[in-house]
Image 1 (cartoon, rainbow, N blue to C red):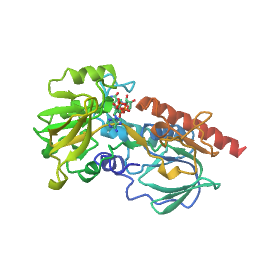
Image 2 (tube, helix red, strand yellow):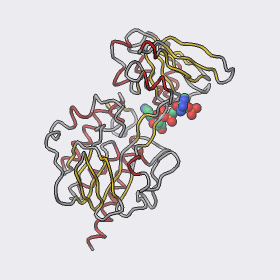
Image 3 (cartoon, rainbow, N blue to C red):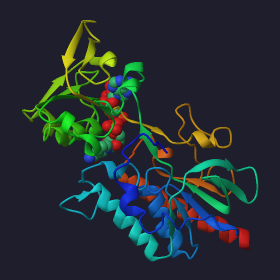
Image 4 (tube, rainbow, N blue to C red):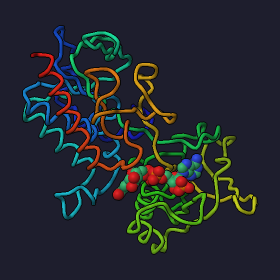
Length: 336
Ligand code: NAP
């Protein structure tokens, strides 16, 4: 999982009880789940209720990307909305109530050609009969050298995590992107910045109608259409002072002063450790068949590491449920 993104949320609360306790056990797990976002924790709930005593490994971002969101307004059952972190904490508690063992651990290596399946978790071996991959996705980067050099010096990928920092207070801020994430970031940042420029490469937002209307109706947000960031300034000063923009229609270049650049241009799946062992598409999304099965018997996948179409908390949760049921049926067939 992407270690670059928001480290503020998960470990402190989600793992308090377990941080010290984790030691990989010598015997074989029935089912191991990698990831504790919506897909992973729903899979944990279902496999726990099926008495499979799942081992659930958090990776570096316990609770997943939703812990970096402020209010989740479209998860059914919460008419007033719910804080993303709170939602994930509740999901974890619900899974633990039925016996899921959530442990802090990052999977470094998988050996899916063996039976049992083998994982290396923080240097230790885990053997498991079934595996549910719910590793989610990390923030996509612009790919500019200046962006990389100024990361954490004004360039960030999470407004909820970093927006309130003193360096951004009452300063002009830039959000890059045109989807729901960019809109959400821009709206959140209006609390802190003097003005929020929303830099988008087209002249129309990709975001849902309700989010687009909120953004375009907010006097503190100024859209900058048809524009891409070509450089984050100023590497020589070791801090963000602005962005160099190019208008993609006119090719005109300009500089926009700002104290922070919040990149919200989508996500990339966290699937590098499965390269060469599981089928994936050109963008690294895992390919499943017949529900959540991968090409390796006993290995199932769910959520943002598979789904590049829907990518919602509720669809990830649904896929986590399906993966749990598929894993349960696989284990039942093995036992017969
Ligand atoms: P997204 O919908 O894929 O949008 C990514 C945006 O970044 C697009 O506007 C895209 O431009 C732009 N972009 C991509 N690569 C770029 C590049 N290299 N340079 C400049 N711009 C670039 O991603 P998202 O906003 O993270 O949303 C992901 C999913 O999560 C969506 O399904 C969304 O509905 C969901 N989500 C929902 C909520 C909510 O309901 N509250 C909040 C956040 C996310 P183009 O438009 O030109 O392609």
